[in-house]
Length: 162
Image (tube, rainbow, N blue to C red):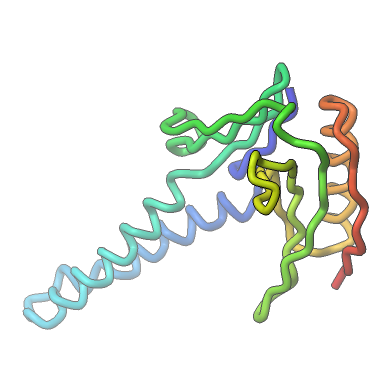
């Protein structure tokens, strides 16, 4: 079984710590006696609650027994939602680069195939990383492992490292 988890990233854990720090930092807004501070505190904590919701639902991509599966997990432990597709629905593995305006580009490990309609391409995003030399090596290694496990060909494309 090949697994790629969001919770294995240090950034996920640091984001959780940052959310806790932000919650502590906003306490004076709700502990104040002034109505205006309560209003801003409600707004502040509602934004923080939305961020915590997205943080608490990381994804996990797996490949096992001829099936690609994406699971949305509660804190990375309890599966809440699953999407799966058979390996036969796909024909190749690609490394794609997505340009970003304010930070390093993103490298996506995509599993692609053709749907019934020839104009649509079935795509399954297996993993993503920032475009660095170390992450490109990780992406290549995972693509090779997926290719060996599924028998899908790897389509090579030019990926620029920043």
